[in-house]
Image 1 (tube, rainbow, N blue to C red):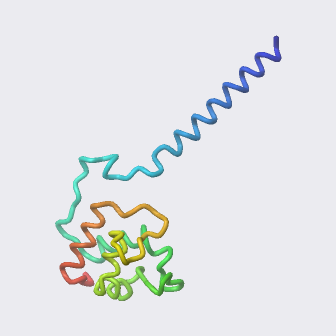
Image 2 (image 1 turned 90 degrees about the vertical axis):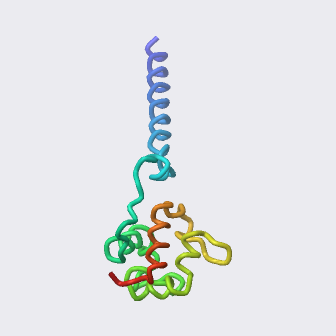
Image 3 (image 1 turned 180 degrees about the vertical axis):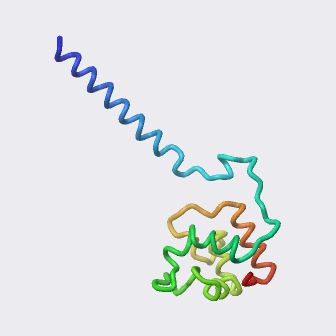
Length: 129
């Protein structure tokens, strides 16, 4: 009789462990806009230092640092980012346009809000502000 109780406990603990794994991974690929659709995209004051640099730090600088610039593209400082913003590579890559390397490579596309902010910054001359 005691052997059956042990098996039941083991089965119960296994089920909890498997369920826990599914729950922990459930939101991994969710994107902020889908999870919180009522959060507005604030594009009123898009600047390099307060808007664009933090996006780059969060999503790009790991691979495109001054010390190790993947593809010879630097996103961690204004001068490096200005080059790819001016020649169209930044917009082409982050929007996954044909003919450009989709960025972040192997990662999810930036949110629509962040893409909009990058677009606004580029359209306003990619200023160092």
